[in-house]
Each structure stands twice: as C-alpha cells, then as structure tokens.
Image (cartoon, rainbow, N blue to C red):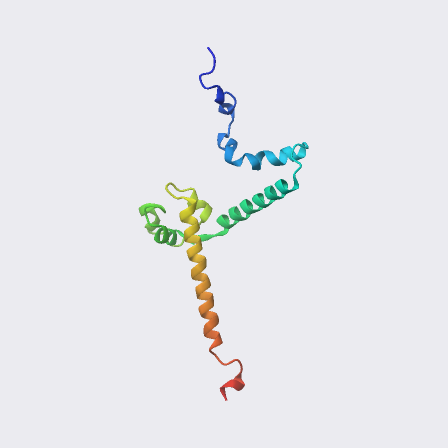
Length: 145
C-alpha cells in the first residue's frame, strides 16, 4: 500500500518530535558533526558555543526570576497570568518563577520578558533614588558644623 506521508515515515516514530524541529538543528547536530570531523570551521563552533551559553543563561534567568502570583497577574493581566485563580485567597504569599509562568496557557515569552524588564527598571530606579538621597546628606560630621 505504501506510506501516504513518506516525509513523516521516520520522524513519526520519534518519541519527542518537538526536539527534532528544524529551528534547533544546529544545536543538536553541529556538535556531533564536529566530533566526527564534519564541521571544522572555528567561527561556526564559536558561534554555537555563544548560542548555547546565551540559551543556558536565559533559561537560568527564567528559573531564578520569581514574583508573587498576584504580582504576575497585576503586571500581565488576569486573563494572561492565571485568570481569577491568581487572586484566590491564600495565593498572595505564593511565588512563581518566570519559567513556571511560561508553562501557563496564553502566556508567551514576550510578555514575560516585558514584565521582567519592567521589574528590573523599577529596581534600578529605586536603587538610584536611594543613592541620590545619600548624596544630599553631609559626607562627614565635620560638614554639619
């Protein structure tokens, strides 16, 4: 009878089809190609190292950045960040990482990154304003005399 979809003959048997996407082929195959002597360009290998480091750093940043569930809902909108469940009693003290928030339906990386950038900017402004308040105080007890 034959295969009606011959292009899927082998990939349909893959347990984790998502790991076989074309957009991550360089991450999956370039290193293996270098191990077998097929990829020898040092610039390509350096670019791969840089990309792997960038991805790893961003994943770590998503895992370590945490906000209270209610803050995620306030900043991202209740519809995006958990709906009415985010404001349920008892949720105020519960924190979730950016990685956990990305696992929620209707949440995308762009929204999470924007919230993270806003929080970092607010923290930066707070730190700067605290530093400026110290600048206006006398630098020593002799300045007050």
